[in-house]
Length: 242
Image (cartoon, rainbow, N blue to C red):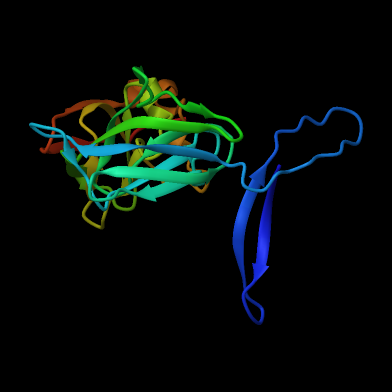
């Protein structure tokens, strides 16, 4: 349960001066809950850029994404000149570190434990310090054409799914794009690694981004290994998926 402290800031305007959280379990009767404002978790650490040496990353925005609600943001902060960041008012739950744009989280450690893929459990009033987040920008591009025999296939969806099942659970790791009128496509900001690539018809339910989609349709996949900072060219045939 979440509560916000609202302060008036003029006519029809307001600001949030604080947040509070409480974990509750509803069984078979009414309950009474007390929520303390200002008991959100805090996460502190340093973010660096991958390279020949660990370089502080000022101005980089670091996010915490809830594992069970990947469309939401649990916390965010911008690193200072030393690469240090601090997040406040984080709701309880299981979260992963995330970075927007061309940068991706290559490593996320705390107290010797790897949280690059594994979510980190965050409780009410938790203070997590000394988090080490390493970003990399050596993403790759996947481009090519979808052909039915020799005929281009326009307006189909190209899906690149990591072969690693844990990586599929991380928001942003399943990549999609659509072919143009000539059947051409391009996927940018692909994290280096092994992928299963499909060409599928568009659908409203976007079932092709489900974590089990690749397993159900593995026979239709094109296997592709993406190296850092490369452009991988691949021609695809329409996939008969389910």
